[in-house]
Length: 150
Image (cartoon, rainbow, N blue to C red; front, side, top):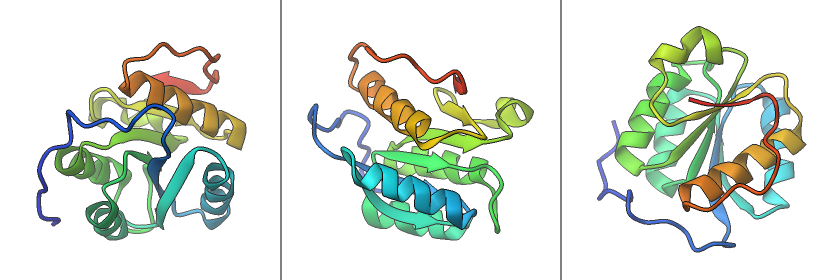
């Protein structure tokens, strides 16, 4: 269990700055595609985790602004990881999974869910919208049809 750092709930990155993103995905091909797409944009990918323990360790090390989270992991599950990461590090959570509807009642409040299958343009648009929303700014882009705000 990570040590609980001070809350960052009132800290938001400056508009236009690079956001730290932790990718929690056990499918290596999806994780690598997401890394390549996001790292070349306005995001800094601070790590890729495939298990619950890796996700918690990397979150403690990097304090990500946003976590892209699959629900079903090799070891552990993304729902438990999301609850722990959000409560300890105030990170925004974007679930990227095929199981949003199946687990809707167990997901943390105020999370977003990008339904698989999705393409990397949809992932980037979802993260851009999530950043703007967290900053209290209007979202000027069309949201991907596979994105659901919970």
